Image (cartoon, rainbow, N blue to C red; front, side, top):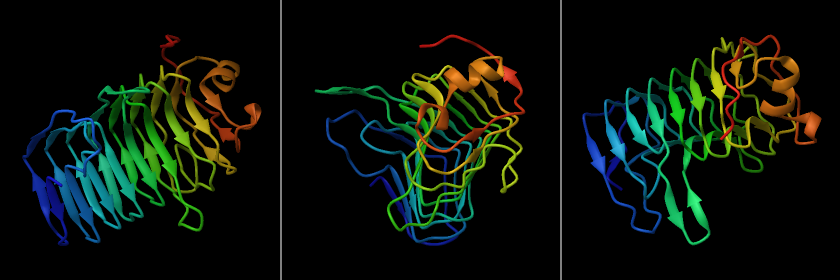
Length: 237
């Protein structure tokens, strides 16, 4: 690890952490575990070897950071991720190129707002392991664009994520556009609310057909996206 946060109430601020791709996955640049009310802010981390920031069973705030690539939150409650710039890094493997995940959520319920997530593999990936706590993040007012595979991916487990209009009170306001295969893939059996957002395409029919893959494609539960704010581009990478 670069930095390990083990005590509650710690602040990590003002660091510039950089590494070169070594060809081997390493430990995170900043790791927080079993700690409460931590703050990680105003850092610049260029870290192709692993996740810049990884938290497990932690609470607090991650804000105003510039990261390449992203953030992992495992089994976290009372966590706020906001105002971060998260950009993917192309990393070469024998089997191809990986760009990393912008924000990875496992069994966690963070508030994710006002982040710019771009040029990653998946912008946001939400999952859980069998028997774990269901992930229920509140996600609002983010720009999630130009990611190489999916803007949002929810894996085939129950999920209570709220992207707008759901039980957690998300205002929506996300701009989810121009992502590789589609903007939103729901493989979960759960119905997901994603209202009041802006998508790649401008009409309900096009959004349902091209931007969101859910029950219509036999993928998972329905994504409820109407009403929506419209489309901003139809440029597909």
